[in-house]
Length: 239
Image 1 (cartoon, rainbow, N blue to C red):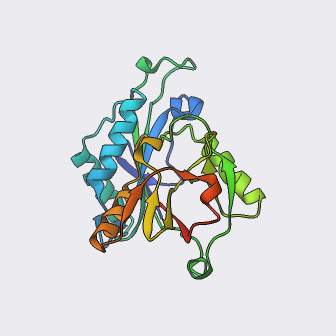
Image 2 (image 1 turned 90 degrees about the horizontal axis):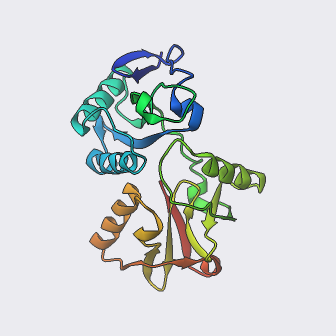
């Protein structure tokens, strides 16, 4: 049995319910964040919550729990599922309202799911991952429930026979993978697109930069042109 935390109550995932009048269902109105759990400890929860709350602020959504309350709810959900390692997703919906888009009639709802991590096959670490370049969707990259551009990008990559894609903006600059941050190894340095290209930069991105600095690897934050992708020594994606 897998338990899901829905608005303060742990319920079997097969019995978990969200109203069809929830604006997340009607309009994709909500935000989410994904965290990793290692040995019963959340990985950088403060950084993830900063991004979650900032994303909510960007769409005028109030998260009804504090960071400490979210942490307690996540750990309770993980414990109820007997998990010390895995992936945790926190979703904050606008809440149930009417068929109109007026958010004032809604009360935000929090859902927490703790599941296994499903990585790419390990053999891909040895010989690499095939990717295709695709046009990046316009607008900021926010972790909201209006995720159709990301879903369409993933579908396009799969149609091309690839598991991933590198998205290239109209100005010719690569902005990242479908749901990932992009790094290139070029001229003895680690190169990654600047923060300005992502409204809320990835937490793992920051960790990679910290690790590189600790190892004495130069890090350069600059645009990566789509035309560079085939000429750099190496490309990798983080999530």
